Every structure is written in structure tokens, then in C-alpha cells.
Image 1: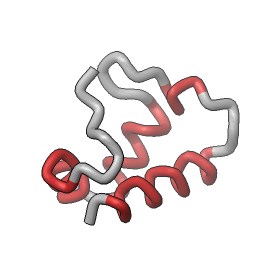
Image 2: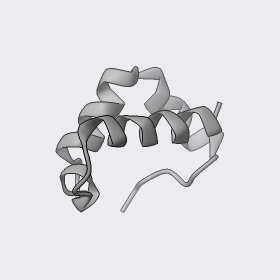
Image 3: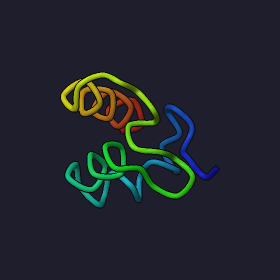
Image 4: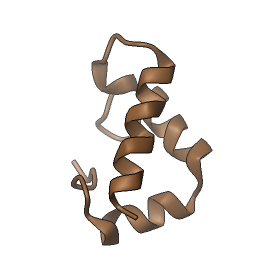
Length: 59
């Protein structure tokens, strides 16, 4: 539903440009059809680490 594919630099670039705070907010609180944390029951820090990993793969 519009989520960028892992490692897709072109798709991730505008999202990364918005800054980590915006990426974290979307991942933690949901965006569009994606529910908060993507229904993951783990910690906020785990979600942030996953966001960092995915963003780094697209740089």
C-alpha cells in the first residue's frame, strides 16, 4: 500500500529527506493502511532500529 521496497534508493530518498523523527513517527504510529508498529508487539527501540536498518540500506 505504497510502502517503499527494501533497498529502493529512489523510493526511500524523499522519506529519508524528511528526517529520522518523521520516519520513526510513521513506523511507531502508523501511516495510511499501515497500523502502528505494523502490528509488531516489540519495543519502540526495536522499531526504531529496524527503521534505521532499512533507511541505511537505501542510502
